[in-house]
Image (cartoon, rainbow, N blue to C red; front, side, top):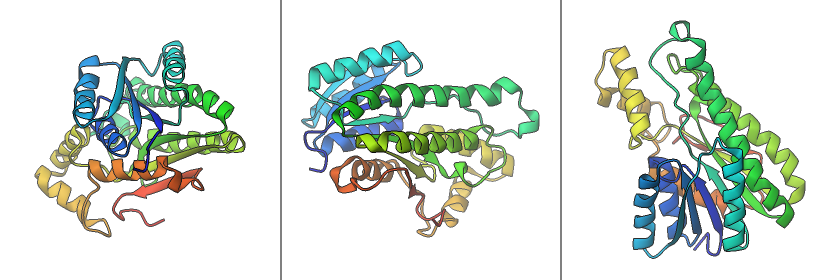
Length: 261
């Protein structure tokens, strides 16, 4: 198993992406600590993990509350002895479907602020323990919109570009302490409720059915398909594992070839 004996924290572990990553990490032997704001969703994912024989702990934690995140990280290290992987997959509340000229300042800025606070707070909390141990991996998820501008996506592309910039900065500062920092850049998984909702709005704006929009997006990729949640989760397993010990300060292309790096 690729993550045997690894201790992993997933913020937003009760969401669609967080849940997929949690199940993949558990399958590969990780000891999981799931954190998020909605205990019911965390417990549903934890039930799947435990039912498959995995080790899992849940805690209600707001990733925007620095004190709560610090206390949770301390509890993880106290219970498990260390912290090997931190992956933040919380929602940002961004809105898509309208041009920037029709958005007010709050609708544009607040999701960016949420994303930056969540990633800064969780990454630095984990990074302090990892730097002391001289080992660890901090992961983040972005999307192709961080590199290719798409119309009517609001602040979503800016959020992704900002996360990637933060990860590069963290990689430079934490690398000398043996800590890796990397992003996975997805092309948008249609089996994610948030993606499905956003693409439905884009399809409506374009005057086509949702399925036609998906087909158009898939047609832009080299593989002529879209990355599903399982694809993203499996890529995260690899980046979190010791098979990727030379990979840091990197944005991994999980777009099925929409982007050519």
